[in-house]
Length: 473
Image (cartoon, rainbow, N blue to C red; front, side, top):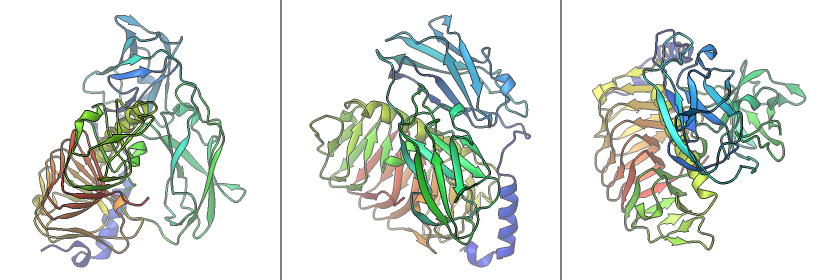
């Protein structure tokens, strides 16, 4: 059996990690074909505010000169809507601002054409088109900072950490700058750059150099930050954290945005064979509550959420009362963007490890890639520190045999482990799993399976007398 941490020399891994880190920022010099990672509004969204902007994020930094009225189009039927287009400062997004308020209860179509090119000159492989329907009113609700990383009062934060703020709704990237999102050590500003993540609701401050060791820092998002409808934060949001003595290993974590608010999130169905136990909220969108089956849901008085004896938390669905539909639209968009982020990470530390069979291995932090199904026929250990990160990419299925276990050692945390699975994910009867699953298709926990993590599926999540616990943040 392969035991990576114990059989490979630490110096060899350090060299490999350094090479990977140096190559982790894609500049499209290799001609990678860019794609549209997320949009706001998302495809087939309804009730869209009439005063909103249209936003698209990309998998690669784009050439701002290629993002124009000729390559980012918004139409009502065959009539093109006039407006201005602004590319994000990091090239990862583009925002269309209509010249006038959109018509109420009307279908619009947005398109990013194949004329849009990455900085290296490679164009989108094909036009990307999505549609949405406006509602009857404008959006006048102020956005909120719904989460931060590091968390407020966090200690032992890695000195190479990036600082991020997640918002309750999609924001205008042009308003998220080093002026509106700052980090300081006492009264001394920290130099850095601000980017707006592909998840569509997360802004990230990347320090120019490593943070000082064992020092308190304050991060602040000011009221200059605005959503796509022009609404500013109601008040500035500030939080503090304290660094530890070392840097984290592995790639940067995957930003989940508001998808991280849920233990289970799916688009088409969530089912249980009673009784399962879920600790954390569950949600489904765009499917309705009728596609959450086996839970004996009981709606609250406002119909914003439901409860179930099997859920230590709440259940949400796209057909519940406001603000649930819009919250879930954002969460699903963030889930899809997180999947694309994880799938698109370049320069893996390990490729085709074990030809997809990782049973019996001890895996160190890093980026792992397979172009096949990944199987776990024997116990696996993930060994690393509390801030270290693992990302596993597979174009096939992920299958764990019955009664097998993924366990953590050295302080590793499930919230920092990301499994991007293009195929089906199945955890066998009585097995135990750790980490966040970003599934393109089904995620299934067979009878008696347990999971410390999140099941985020672009189709359905199936639980059979299973236990799923949302990891601590």
